Structure formats: C-alpha cells, structure tokens
Image (cartoon, rainbow, N blue to C red; front, side, top):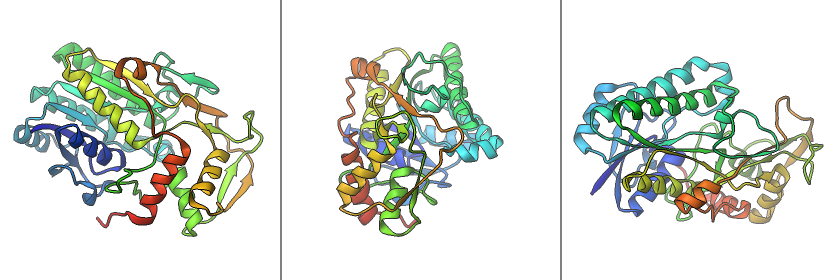
Length: 327
C-alpha cells in the first residue's frame, strides 16, 4: 500500500482526511501529539505519536513508512488564543512546520499538501475571495499559516518540494457514516455550539448584531462540509502525483450563510428550537466573509456537493447524538 503521512490525523479534519485517503487506496499514517486530537479518531491506518518539533521522531517515522506525500493539518487554530498568545502560534505552527518540511525533504518525500486558511487574507469584507486576493493577516494564526506557505515556496526553489495549498474558512458537518466527527473540548465552533444549546448542555446563543447590510441583518460566513474539504485534499494529492506544478486553491461556496440561516436550518433539521438572544455587534466582526472556488472547480474538478447548511447540520447532529471519543 502507498503511505501518506497525515499530521494532525487524530483531529477533526485530519481524521476525515484519513478516511478519504483510505477510500482512495492510500494508507494514512497519522502523526499527532494528541494535545487536541483523539486516539479514538485514528481508525484508518497506523498511529505514530509525536510532536512536529521532534526531528528525530519525524526522521524515524519517515524511514519506517517511506510516505509518498505529506498531508499537513497539525496546527493550533483558535483566533482568540492566537491574539493572546502569539508566541505559541509562531512556535508551534511555524517552527513545527519548518521541522516537518526539513524532515520531508531529507527523506526525499517531495509532495506536500498543506491545509492553510483564508485567515491569511485578513479581512476583505463583502468580497468573494480568490487566490489573488492580497494576504494581510490580522492575527498570529493567519500570519503563521502564511509563513508556512512562504517556507514551502522557498523549499521548492531549493529542494524541488512540490506543494498544493488549500485556503478555506469554516468547516462543518461530519462523516455521514458516523465513524469520525467533530470533538473539541471546549467546543468553540458555531454549529456544534448551537447543537449543544439545543440539547441544553450550554447556555443560549447570542446573535451578535442584527443590523448588518445583509438580507436578514446578520453576518454571513462561509462553511464547507468536512467531507467536501478532505475530498479536495485527496484531489490535491492526485494533482501532485500526476507531476503537476505547485498550486494554491481556495475552497468555499462563494455565497456563505448568515447566522440566522444557520439557526433556521438547525431548527428544521433537529425539530427543536434553538435557544438564542439578540445582542449588539461585536467589535471587529465583518459583514460578509466568503471565498469562491472557481480554480478548484476548473482545475481539480472539485465541487462542494455536501456543503448545504441542512446537510452539514444533519451530519453534525447525527454525530452529536451518537458519536464521541473517550481518549
């Protein structure tokens, strides 16, 4: 079998990527330190515990499995935390990625799929982002991801490392077959937080601002179904395996969903009221943050077919009711 090293493979997106890789005929080798990941989520291939900063451990794993590619998800990703503790983000996301990239090149593994973020663009309100939008990140999370993109470019010039970079906003939903799902502790993402509010396991949601210049007055954000997202990553791997050049792809619906649309879809899917209140706008919140994916559609043949709000919530709700990890 053909091995692919998946960093962060015990996390939310990484575990779904492992499932997609296995379905595509690869053996995903999860490399994770389990700080935010779950050993229970590693179901589709071998597990190797280790930190991105541990070069000797990385060298050992590369030698043992001889992967044909790296799929790199492992990162700290909370914007609020990144504002409060930027050093952790630079050290973990940038130094860790640099160590990983050096280890990959030393092992002759020159295909690299990187999960980046639309946070590298900063705030371009009411614009449908594309790959040429200027990158002006507002915090250490976006800045650290942009720095890794720059490292990849430099290592291509020096060592011939080829990369596919994906930038996207919010990810939602879960594996429709219920083998893996989203399990953060504490949970901060809107949809699982809303499902917890419906269940009564957390207080009512607050809608921050109802007077935005949008059809229903609430902010609009872009979401992609996690299964659509990881399908794109597998297509990115195929792109590299086909000998094509390094490329950046944005992934999004191009339209986005308002906070009220998310609440309405939750109500209709779960058949329960969503406890919520209305509050003033939060400082710094943009009206509309969305990304297109014209290039990914044209060049990778990618379509976000599951990325409707009812589908994302239905899959998340099924996982919320039936799935969890113990450790």
